[in-house]
Length: 148
Image 1 (tube, one colour):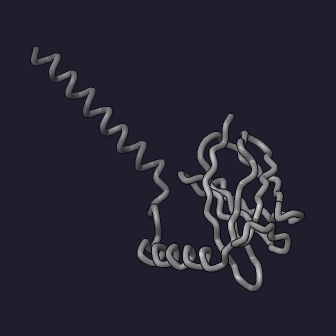
Image 2: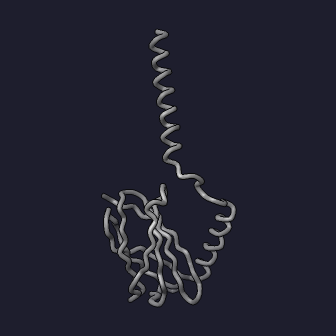
Image 3: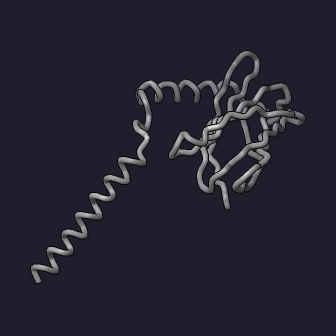
C-alpha cells in the first residue's frame, strides 16, 4: 500500500512540475504594462466615445479562418450614417502578440466601411477600431470569434 501511495505522489508531483515548466515557457511576460495608466486611458477613451456620439456596428455575423471582408457601419448620435471618417483596424490575439496586424478601411458609402482581414487561427480575436474624424481619434475596442 505504501508503494502505491508513493507512486501516486510521484505522478502527481511530476504533473505539477510539468505544468509549471510549460506555463513558464509559454508566458510572454507582463499581462498589462502600467495598469494604472492604462485604466486612466480607458476612462478617457470611454468619455471621448460618449461625447462624440459616434457608434460602430460590425455587420459581419460570422468569421472563418482565412481571409474575411470585415464590414463596419459608423453612425452618429441620431443613427445617421457617417461617410466621411477614416478607419484603421488593429487585429490581435488575446494570448499572443505574434499575429498583430493593422489594416486600413476603404469605402464609407452609407457609413459602411470594409477591410480585407486575415484571421489565420480559430478562436477569439481583439479588434481595435480607430476612427479619425474632425481632428479627433476615437478608439472602439471590439471582440470577435473566428470559426473553423
